[in-house]
Image (cartoon, rainbow, N blue to C red; front, top):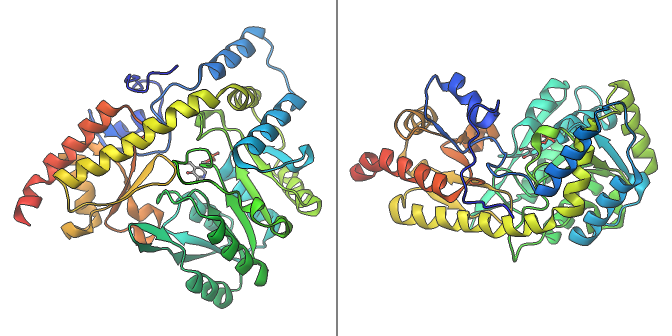
Length: 394
Ligand SMILES: Cc1ncc(COP(=O)(O)O)c(C=O)c1O
């Protein structure tokens, strides 16, 4: 079993998280808790399956084997109570590429697309790059977590003639795992106003008890007529580089439109090593995931307690899922530039700036806590030290 405490050296591995920052910030020695991959080794079963595939020595075109479909079907059924037929499963080279195809399949140029504010930033990028109109509905921060503002969403839908809503469940960057009740309300709202729903469920397996993940398509069978689900094994098992994902489309007519967009973009084939890794992860990765989840939730608790003691001015949203934490620095009254400057130049740590997730992310930072405890401790101490003088002045 993986020792999550062991620091795995990643510098010099062409890692975006560890290596790209030298060029971005022109500094050595920064500690990166930003882009969403983990600093942990993937499950051994995945590495073994990839090594077996490499050992064969022939890397020609491949089909999607039945064993891959059944691994996905079993995983969705046993972990999420989501029943899928083989026909409903399509493959693609990533959730973000699938978002682009979904926009092309179910909307036209200049159509208005709704997302939350804040939310995973490529949603906005994909909408703009596909010449659709971006409309954001702010989330409400209540009792230390995000809630959907259904009234504001309905108003935005009606006023802008919204055609499609991209849901992020579990929510990045806030870590909310939307409840069945919340999903029912939003589903009914979208049904009422003929809004198509694309549900990004890539973080579905990183959920901390007692919270439970609910797929949008299990909420009500009628929701499958106006929605698709995008997911992947890549977040769960730390495989982001394999560029492999699934699209679940139960409705045959909707599936046909998505396949047509895939063909138009020549996107029907994906990397063989990715499918090998996905199958091995779903078949044999569960014990690894069961060991990972408590490690991650202890990391989250560690951050909360550290900040309460050393930086009580930073407000924390405790994540219900994901390995991402949304930190509110607004009590310091700093501009976004000042906040970033202190973190980079004085604390020597890289987090994600809140503003990339939408205007409501101002004065916030997203911290990726999927790292060994010793790195997390180091990062937090460096941040606390950098803010000590500001805290003293308060
Ligand atoms: C909500 C969400 N969707 C999609 C992705 C990326 O998916 P992919 O690498 O399959 O495009 C991420 C990565 O952080 C994410 O957080």
